[in-house]
Image 1 (cartoon, rainbow, N blue to C red):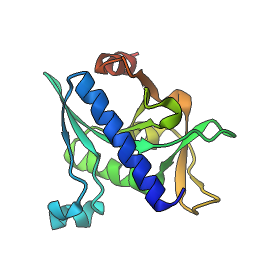
Image 2: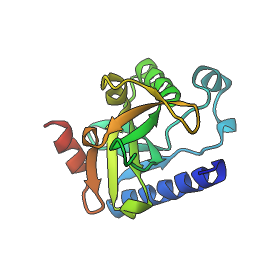
Image 3: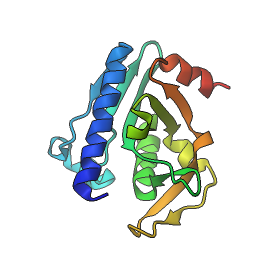
Image 4: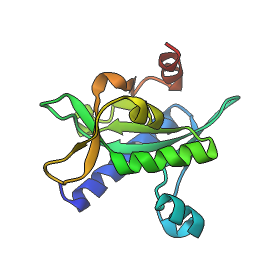
Amino acid sequence: MNYDDSKQKGEEAEKKFKDWLDKHKIHYFYIKQDIEFFSAAFKDSFSGKRPDFMILIPNLGLIFVDIKYKKINPDYKNYPIDVEETKIYSSLQRKFNLHIWYVISNSDFDYKTWLWIPVSKVIESGVTERISNKSGESFFPIPSQDFIQIADNDSLDRLFSKMLN
């Protein structure tokens, strides 16, 4: 998949996630993707990396979510999560006491299933990073069972109940 295809698939996943949030009447801010709106300090410290959504949870606070269009690796049954991006998010999370999650879906799921995983779990999973034969970039191969699966008709209640189990 080339850069333009990848970008288009990512935007499609973000739109479908926004639709899911709206369907469940979940409060959120969609974070504008142009880094020109971020401070120079933020760009310097975090390379301008920022999650896609800020979800507001009554009586609890907020979580940041980065939406990813990813497909499972059919040979290894895992999802590749970018190492550099994860390290940046981990630093952002620690420095500002934030909660940042990856949420994955794709057209194979018809965007009716969302796979959630906190950035901290990716880092702490003990999974050894690997290098892609195609791109040459480092990734964490995260097994599908490490994600919390949320169906289209589920609300955030399912996420929280699974987190506590």
